[in-house]
Image (cartoon, rainbow, N blue to C red; front, side):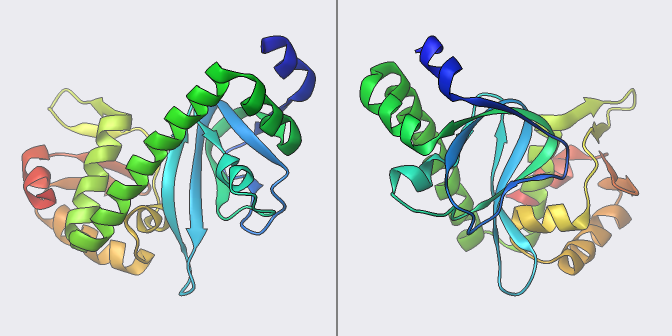
Length: 209
C-alpha cells in the first residue's frame, strides 16, 4: 500500500489563509492532512460562512464528493495553520478503496467520526442559543489551544477574529461583537486584538449549559 501511495500521490504545502479548493471546483482528488489545520466550510447567502469541521493531522477531506460521484466539491477548504498534505487523484482513490481493506476501513471510520461531529454541530445550531454556542466554542478553543497562566487564566494560543468566531457558531461578525461585550464587562474573558484569555472558566461553563 505504501509503495502504491508513493507512486500516485502529490505532496502539497499550503500557508495559513490559503485556499485548497472552493465550493464548485472540480473534485479531482482527496487530501490527507499530515501537519497543520484546515477548516471545511459552506458559504451562506447572507454573507460570511459556516465552519463545518476543523481538521487536524491524520484527517482526510474531499473524499465525500468522490464517493458520492459529485463532479465538484460541495464545501470549501481553507488552511487555518500552515499545512502539509498529500493529494490522491479520484481514480486512484477509488482503486485503493477496492484493493485495500485496511485503507477502506480507515476511511469508513473517519467518515463516521465526521458524521458524528456534523450531527453535533447541527443539533447545536437547532437547540442552543447564540450565547450558548459562543460560550461552548470558546471553551472548545481553550481545550484545544489553551495555555495556563500563573494566575489561573487560560490564554487561547490561536489568534481569532470575529469573522472566524461567527463562522464557528453560525452567525455574523456584528453579532459576535455584541455577544462578547458582556463577557468582557463581567470579567469572564479579556481580549487584546485577536488574542483571547479566559479568566473565569466556571462562569463560561454555566453560560454554555
